[in-house]
Length: 330
Image 1: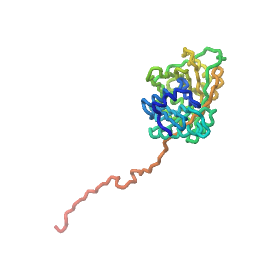
Image 2 (image 1 turned 90 degrees about the horizontal axis):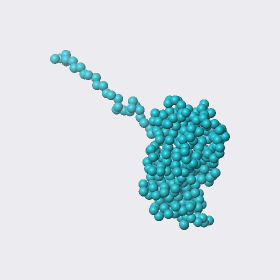
Image 3 (image 1 turned 90 degrees about the vertical axis):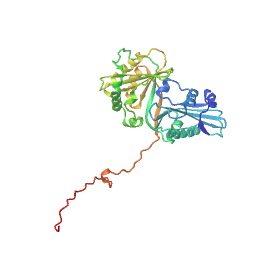
Image 4 (image 1 turned 30 degrees about the vertical axis):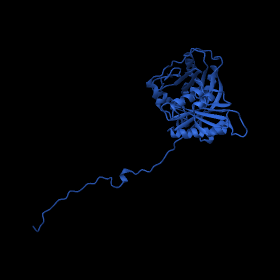
């Protein structure tokens, strides 16, 4: 039976699951996902577009699937799959239960007017990726997660002359994104200039975001974004091909803004592979790979339309004036 989360599920969600998969986004790398706390927020604010938790229970086995909305957009990220309870041979496997949960999650998303569902599936979990494939998810790119764990072999102290992002930079950043990102990725992510705005934290302890840009206002060379949370700092960047030799200086500038010992991560897409070597020289080491998946819950509909010039009765009618003449027999 698949249902929404109830107060009785919170205690079970606090226990260590028998099997779980966390689909790490940049936000989850910065702030660890807590299934019980997430479910509590779903109870208070409701399962819907902003967040959702579904529970499946069968003969003592409980499974959960959770999705987080992207604020202000008709999109959700699937962030967590977990199973608790004793495994029995006669019961469906964890992956079978997760399939049914995700299928219902997609249906609920459509009812809540969510147009796109995203998932960052770990590359080593082939069974999980197969579940998403059977549900209609498609991979649009891959990303590598790197952790700052080594020394700076470059041993230089040069920093890029970056400045804090401002409102006037939104369109320039979006233009840079369009110049360095493949069209397939752009089509899957459906970003606009507003995506690059930096939201203010809505609550105490929330994630902090900040970004910097390099270059003239209308022709940026690089963009560096930092997401910080209680679990660490996460960098992501855009850089033009003719400015790739400055990637170390750009990252070193970002590292210079940090003053604590929390873990530091860097996320690179597969079309940024040429940046791996200089980033490794700076001390970043790959720790995982993910396939970025997307599923659209809407389809294009063609409707026949009649051109106004061909529709009957819409052309203006001009009445010719009638001229009366005197009759000759009068």
